[in-house]
Image 1 (cartoon, one colour):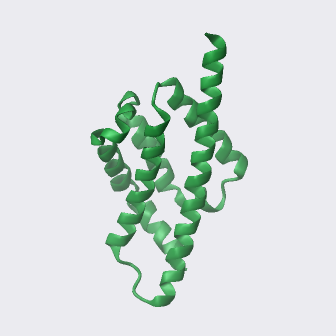
Image 2 (spheres, rainbow, N blue to C red):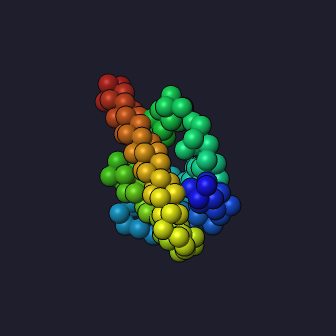
Length: 149
């Protein structure tokens, strides 16, 4: 199955990908607030997703995604990171995966295109859900902060 071959390719290159996204985010003015987050924290988070992508796409439950990503959203709010910067970073992370897969040029037959499209669909679903739960966590943290003030 090509989709799983592509996932394994991403998992194998998790170090390279997580380092690449951390470097990009450190220098991108669209997410300058992420400099408030320790670089090792950002790199560890992206490495975890890239290294265990098959688990994230196939085995993590909705409840697990909600728990993890609402926690991340709340943490970013507590760190004072603008949500627009969080959103931009998630989009950049997904974009890096697309660029990586395109540069690898693993699709050589028309039938393989369907496997690649299926992987893109799964990744889109994952990132959309993760972003939704991050937004929820972020909003809850802001409400708690305002109530405490």
